[in-house]
Image (cartoon, rainbow, N blue to C red; front, side, top):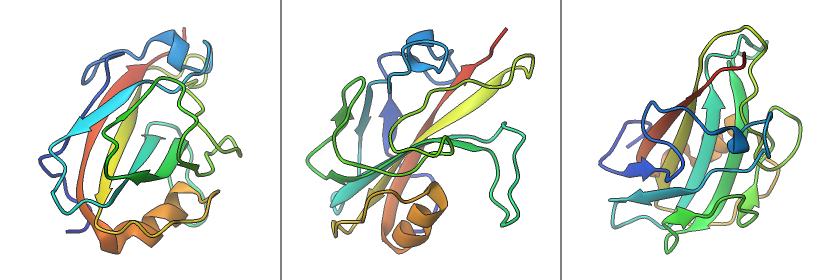
Length: 159
């Protein structure tokens, strides 16, 4: 399938599509990962991955990556369809904060409204992937196995 939207749905009880991300899920608040749930995954799904990426961050690297990665989480079994707030389960990748785990929105002061793309990827493979991968390393590994995906976009702005 590659990277194309599917019928999967990704939701959060903390904010809706295009809605403002509450401060407790930001770097200015408690910096907790938000609760997420997904539905309508392909029947062939064997595992899932979750990503949070801010494409509005004014960062472009020498290898062509862009934006700021806030969360990379994978090796989520196909029997799981929700993540609790502040989850510490499953395998963490490396965010652009240089650490594993979730790091909430905190755009530069005065930089305006940013959009945060929370993605769920359904994979038709459940082979364990080593911890600590960056978003770009993970995408390179899983691309052949992606059979469904969708996103939830939240917004945040610092004053």
